[in-house]
Length: 409
Image 1: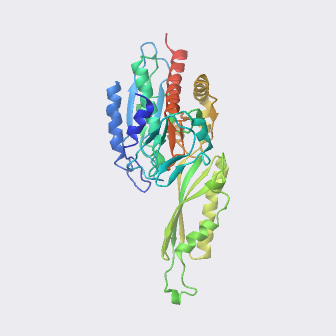
Image 2 (image 1 turned 180 degrees about the vertical axis):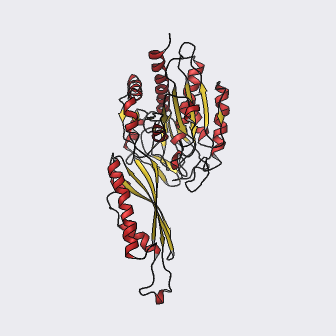
Image 3 (image 1 turned 90 degrees about the horizontal axis):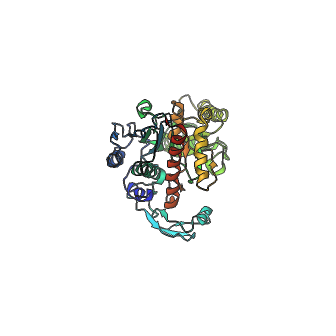
């Protein structure tokens, strides 16, 4: 089975995570895909495939005879889809021999070659899109499909290999995907997440990240008698937003430039809440951004009354690059496998985070590989069957490379 054939089945399973939940997984529906994958893994011959109480799917392919001394390699993807756009009732649309032009998706949505110039480079491929009403879920069900297809290929073709560990994790999209993975039981010396962009990408540098929430308490008074008495919490939320640098938003930054991203604002006169995610590749600039938020909290409480504003900052993940540098063979091997397929590797600083960032800090070096997709988290998400095939070849190439260079024979 080709990877894209698995993808179009996986995306039909509703797995969106919930950042407001305090359970793991954050949504029980992630178990639906977890159990499906465990059964499929067993059918492939991964006999120890299992799902734990937190929806982590883990399985192992033992080393081929004579290759027990090869490095133990892990591959990881995540079950959930982002809450940014609906992931329920996904209807993937397959466009064979795509002509490189605009596509009317439905619901008035047009996948535009002007907005996404790379579409012209996908001409002639089999393009998979949404129907315009949901996200697609290639992030990261394409990664799951590619890892599953890699496993099928290795087992079916009896390709010599060292020990292989596979994990599918919940809640990556809300920053919790790697927290409860049992690294010792996973059993890998290092791993790759398959959760990036184009098929020739490799990422080992990501944002430092935090979530920041301002809770605002106002004073509600009849507007006819509000002079010097009313404190409008909703207006204070707007005031806080205006105190941050206007140019430091996702819409105005790129590459390694950080930002404050306003994700939610709700409220009325009596109470309000304004939420941000804070990002920067540079740890010092990241800390400076957090300090700016704390200064805003202090300033607002001094301007109005103590306790008007309460800021809660929650760390989410840190830049993995310092944990990858001592193990650059992981990156170099992936780059070489990409080159052998006739592509130029693209080393991209991730403007986000992956499970690999947390895992690297927990002692499992784990860069991120591209999965062949584009425009994640929204109605314009798309991927090609051929790009997914390339990723499967890259994964198999990595396994072969370490087996050939490190076998006991």
